[in-house]
Length: 121
Image (cartoon, rainbow, N blue to C red; front, side):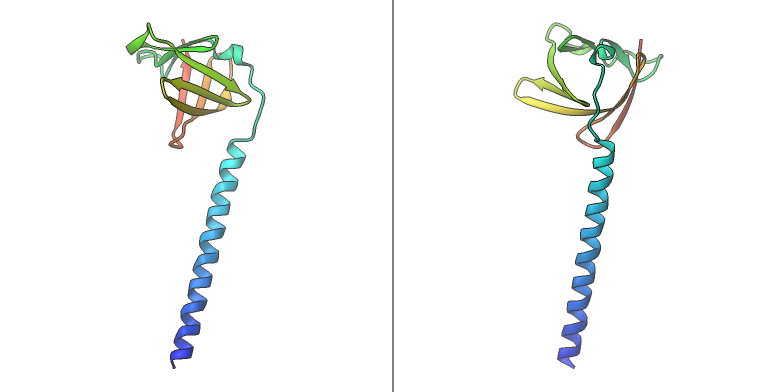
């Protein structure tokens, strides 16, 4: 009886472990698809970006600097590599993946897996 219970328990543990591994692999594959590297025309990033035409601007990008309205006199240094924006805030670096970019639209995926839709003004 104890051997049967042990074998059943072991089988359930193996099955659950396999399911979790498959789930993690599927999640990672999904992220990899979203984050496929692509070359971005960084000149399209220059401009004032807002979430919609009625709200205040979120930020302005000019060259290698990002300006926030709250602290416009202290620009944030940015580096764009392939499809990723690295923003250097003092001792913190944030990473945003560019999912979509045109002359007037920008969609970013941040480190929290939030999608941010922006329009150029």
